[in-house]
Image 1 (cartoon, rainbow, N blue to C red):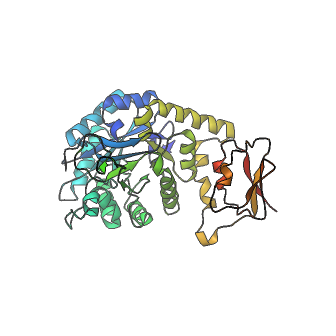
Image 2 (tube, rainbow, N blue to C red):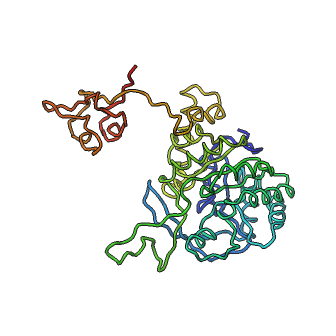
Image 3 (tube, one colour):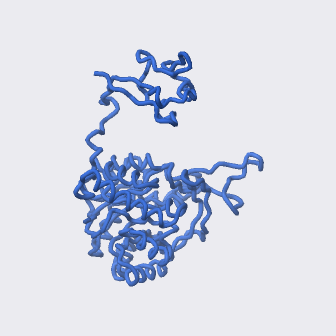
Length: 391
């Protein structure tokens, strides 16, 4: 694949995070079939000395209030090691904490000289700047991370400076918290972005609390705590939305991360408009073997469905997208297969529905009452309910 000037053997990139902070991580990623990696966020100055802490509910969600970023020297060395010890495409996820925007130009030159294949400018991290602002603790002039990504003019200026100072692709990573991410995307593309990196989710979240310990947040080994970046399965649906939204506004390649746990999720993300997919939290829950399983599943799908390339599936779902007032509602109803139905009664439970009834120890749908909502289909554990389209 050609992604924004990068040659990739498949669409899988390990997204910037705790599993891209060491050369051993990157080597494991390559052994399991990843085509590229975005190294852990590099900062010119540490705004706080974080250590990895998170609320984790496997296969559901992670909430990170704290994690260590790489210093500039660490980032440069990791790039050099990655280019020496792997054949991966290496993206560097970074931001500047310096007062002048020209620092992005200086950083771009340094990263290119170290061997980086592309720059993934971090305009999405919510753990500094945005978190303080949402709690009313930030200065009026506070910028950085997700605050940068909410400002189209600032985002474009940074992209322009970086592009003018290097010959490798510039791929800014945008924040889903922007009021209009499409406008930010368009501004970055006009400034010369070769592609865009997207992530879903509301960006920041709060964890559940221990209701028996005075409401203490369920982070490990922490006293006072804060909101945290949200990742994992829970944000997948918003990543679909963000990907489709941006794909409708710009014509540069997109890489999307956030909630990809299986090969089906990866294929769905590409059909919503992503040309490559980023995987992070799945590797924290299941190791890099998760990457191998996703890659094998994607390859098998393309072969079985007769697609000649990954590019053939990019954006297939966009033709079905329209505004709410233009939705085309089909006529139909639910239908229960008596041969599969176990009469468990789950489909009788929805409080809004009076279409499913029990007659002579069998469940059936009264078609004239059915709203066609589809809730019962998801409730049935035995696959006994399907939606039937009416002429």
